[in-house]
Amino acid sequence: MNKAQLVEAIADKVGGRQQAADAVDAVLDAIVRAVVAGERVSVTGFGSFEKVDRPARYARNPQTGERVRVKKTSVPRFRAGQGFKDLVSGSKKLPRGGEVSVKKAPKGSLSGGSSTRTTAKAAAKKATAKKTTARGTAAKKTTAKKTTAAKKTTAKKTTAKKTTAKKATAKKATAKKATAKKTAPAKKATAKKAPGKRASARKTTAKRTARK
Picture (cartoon, rainbow, N blue to C red):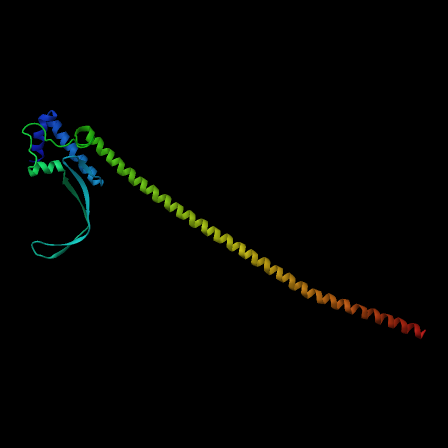
């Protein structure tokens, strides 16, 4: 059964061929978009569609037997639900008329029409929101790292300035002490020489008086 035959098979149940074609297109579009975005589309009783990542590996060419490297890729995967498996295996019989008796799908899943399109849009919005949140978080972390680094650098510079100022103050104090030590002996020597001059002056005066 191809797509056209599928549309014809459900045309009477949906109200016409055009409505059936729109329903099939909407269902397939919703499944493809959700799987491409990395989400899992699950229909209870029927199966689930999901995206699977395959790592890089080596394979053999069946014609030549040559070993070939296969790049990393992503592929879609479908897993049949238990109800679908039971019907295919024959443990459960298909009803002769009416719909297949599988469990009802969750609300908003593959039902066709506008609800399916809404689901696809919602899935796309969720994926965009996740990417935006991830980018915002990464930007906040980067800003926090830069701020922390700037604070550490400023603190180091401030500490270095304080250390330099302390060293300069210590040098000035040492220079003052050295100057004070040099000045003190000079003053003492001057004080000692002064009495000698006075004594010589007295002796000269005494000699002059004696001559007279």
